[in-house]
Length: 165
Image 1 (tube, one colour):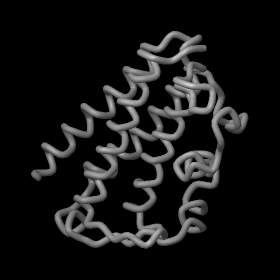
Image 2 (image 1 turned 60 degrees about the vertical axis):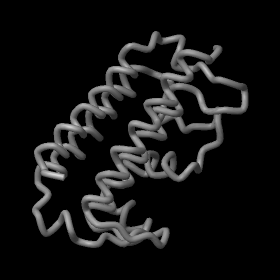
Image 3 (image 1 turned 180 degrees about the vertical axis):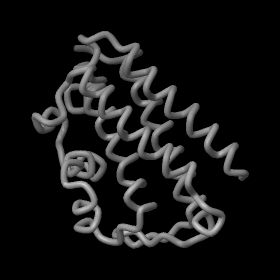
Image 4 (image 1 turned 135 degrees about the horizontal axis):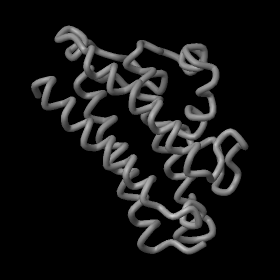
């Protein structure tokens, strides 16, 4: 896929994800489909974590330790991506607060957008090995990133349609 098209698709997915968060009313951030499932805000945090996780893979992290050292402040995002937090047990650094969610969303989107714009043809075909044993080309990594964020956005819409506070 041409890089310009890839970037435009990412821009669309990222903007849709951000718009979903910004359209949610404050009381909807805590909504869940069932008491045992992740809330709207927790689902958004997990999506941001997945975005960050693929970013560190593209940056060359081959172990979780390497990923953590790239930005220790993003440990909470990596933990959310790896399902280390049970529903209702997210840390204080990941509040059920729209302003904080949007701020972190903008940071992750900006990071990923910059990475996608800077991908050289060699990087797009380069194989990236993950610490969970998978290997993907740069293009495959970007496709997985876009799919996962769009998938989580679908979850957010489901919570808004069927969730309860």
